[in-house]
Image (cartoon, rainbow over all chains, first blue to last red; front, top):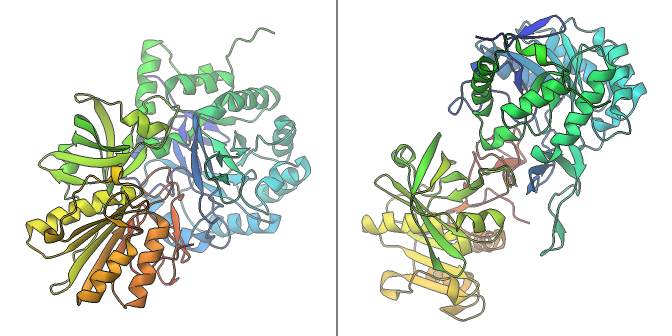
Length: 306
Length: 263
């Protein structure tokens, strides 16, 4: 069997198929429908210092090739997360990366400190600086290289574990933000979070999302995500985790060729929570057929014309 | 909660824009599904419409499950083109169900539009158990009604345009049943405005019951957190992670009268 393992920072993952934050709950919800031990890692829903009720409905609308969400970081808060989820993760046979969000630098730091102080087997943290659906924090950090650097620097001092900055595509040049994260000590970046989108019901003449704008995800955003991953991988030394409309092996291969060290499955989990396990299975077959010994040999190997 | 490939055995138009689909799904059919529960159907195997469609179960017979759907959007129009013999991916059974009230109370089933399927199933079960009950069905026009009015069986129809049954909403019919019957218990499913009116009527007459709701949702099993409805009581922590909201997919779709805030 081909070697599917990938290394991010100092951590080895058994394969490059992860689930994206906000699309797989806390990893404990869908055990009836899939075997999560097949996955390289799961990334939790964003955790904030206090529990958040999220945005009023409607929060979801389907669009051509995708969907728009405006959940508003609804989550159980760090205390309940530690009490209920961290103990469960001890029995997981897959790596867990905890996604953190906040409205101030202090809040991000506090959440990370609180989780990091508890003995657990989590692999690291993904820092959400790119949520388009909350008024403060989130994307406000991810659109500025300065605040990205300041936040990353502070977090870097607090933990030895992985720090992955999740980047927004809603910026002029994503590589500027990526470089700021890298220089401030991030182990990796993940790209992309959702794009700001809107949906209108022409019959009722109403917006389909309470907050007017939401985050567009799914296969519709894949070309944008591929371009962002390729640009980041071409200008950074640290690994890039690719996200955006991945539904099957061709997508995984394309993101890997564009430069992704690992990939995250997002929207597709809502349609088929077993899709990650199936893709890992298909990846083994793909490597066998193409006589690939180690899948990471494909990273960044796309042939471009200039 | 099971993912199963179902075999379509029938898919036909039963009233204007209303279709009944029957699918062989032995595993889900034998999973002790109850009226009120729903399934998630994968209509589009390409990713143009990436999400599954949540649909209430309209009945289960042996290994066959049926749904009744209205052709209103791209996915439901596409579902109407499926033929017997085709297969379709189903996740189910999902959500909670109506619970049959204690002995002595008389069930009044109130359905509006495509809220009818779960109540039709409940109606069949109550009929089989010889439990006296009422069924009130509202629609926009007579062409959308496929159940026949039958006062001997306590089945009443209403239409918004007066083309069939009583002209107007279901509420005056429900009130007339309340006036002449003691100890009733309401089961309702339909558009939010109807549920709000049913709840107001129930409050006014101090009547208990259960309401089945719907919402846009991406998954149907708790991971998208999209399908929230507002709670009135703020007492119970739900799958929505907080007191203000409940998830239709896991905390519902059936809620007790008075639990939810409409509007």
